[in-house]
Length: 348
Image: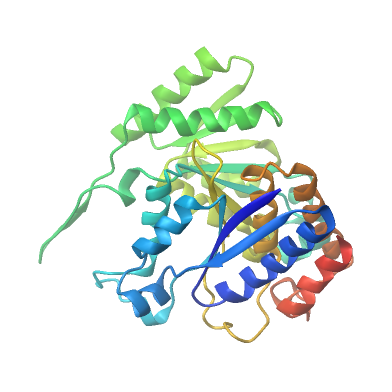
């Protein structure tokens, strides 16, 4: 297979961890006879510095022409003024919107060797296998915003069509897994959540009668996610709730450095990135954990390039490295980024 992959290293540790994922993808290509071409472009803080725009038009156009996009991280103290009119995170939101990526998949499957890195009791984590599906292009992050000297507002708005497409994607995913969907909302308070619940119930009843559907309020879900995570399969929710719950779910895996993500739409193109941030405090030190970005590259192989065997091999290689306690500092080990990357390459 020939594939064009746009790489958006971004800020902080982004360039280091994307370089690790590229090394793994190149090794996969070499072993399996594929041709992967990589092209780097700017996004986030570095794009603001170079182009006065967190998502330059050239970057977005390159992404639209690509088969897949691999992203590192955006943001850092240099651009952290909350009152700034231009912020790195705007580039990420605009990229998702520009590519029509409305479903963010975040798998959470704690590895047995890394259970000790989580503050959650190990017996609660054994057998946990969850995918959180977060709606990406609607809700309060994209609603109309106002600000005066004495007040501010952010509009949370959803259409039926926006809810239908992300809920359908979660049901399709559940059909290939354990057949259970948990839809998370705040229907006891919010009108958007009442619409969300009605649409989710209809989609489940009419289109996916073989999939079990449960509704949960977001506050109770936040508790259950840590107290009884084994009970959940696919969790689908709106943009802001999903943002918060997926960061909470990282506690189950023991480190943000182990969790990948895929942002998908109706086509084959997707944006693949670790869920961790730019970690400016360790940027340039060669100690960042590359596993989440390498696992994101595995999702890229599976969802955008339809290379399921290769994706599984990459995931197995990371799993074997963890089995052999090839740990970076966030997991209690001493490996640097290069050594952890090599540990995966050796096990492919």
